[in-house]
Amino acid sequence: MQILDGKSLSARIESEVPQQTKALKTQSGRVPGLAVILVGHDPASAAYVGMKKKACDRVGFYSVTHEMPEDISQSAIEKTIEMMNDNPNIDGILIQLPLPKQIDTTRLLELVAPHKDVDGFHPYNVGRLSTGLEGFVPCTPLGVMRLLEAYDIDVKGKNCCVVGASNIVGKPMAALLLNAGATVEICHIFTDDLKKHTCSADMIFVGTGVINLIRDDMVKEGCVVVDIGINRAEDGRLVGDVDYPAVSPKCSYITPVPGGVGPMTIAMLLANTLKAAQNNANESK
Ligand code: GUN
Picture (cartoon, rainbow, N blue to C red):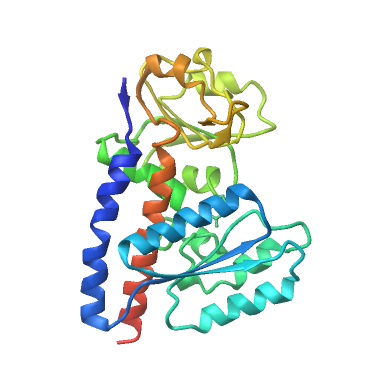
């Protein structure tokens, strides 16, 4: 069994960003800029946004976080997005999800200018991904693909079981795998007999938020297991969706939690923001 070490790969990817940032600045006078919208006081969201901001600081990006109260109105957020769409110092816009109940999330995601959509959540970019065209790809599944590539794991022709069908993780993960030539099954909360599906998979990609959803009797010998879950266990530890101690001995490769997919997500946000800045610099030439 080999560990897919997202921590060291993300550090390697991140270490190349400052040099590219400097090159962009020399060529165009521009520094990549990321704007984040954080609504309310969800501790997990605040922690993620804090990590994203710190990563921007480490690599020399400009970043600004718009913190808004839980009871903010739809129109106030929309005004902020419109302002950021028009701000030439902002290359990427990220709305941290989930948002409070009174907010129409889809409307906000559709308002983000597609060329600043570094999360890849705008229907324009979702459509481009599903048709196999170049565009912004959501950071978490993009990070998974980069992790597999780094370990020379080819998904072509493999039976891939994606567990969880969210717009943020499961659906774009399935699209990327399909585009790369995998045979893809997507399981979700209404799937009957999950084990039947996971047992026939060469690779499992699970992101559901359910601790120990994937147990050792659900995984075939030699499987590649990518754990995209992040959960807080009763004792306070961070754990994924996979029963790691029981499952890992059966795997050819497995991602740990923490230190697997999580840091790759942040590295891909930096990569997407740099790409947006490079595109925007070329556009304004
Ligand atoms: N909430 C959970 N994951 C994500 C993510 O990747 N991006 C955003 N914007 N919100 C999230």
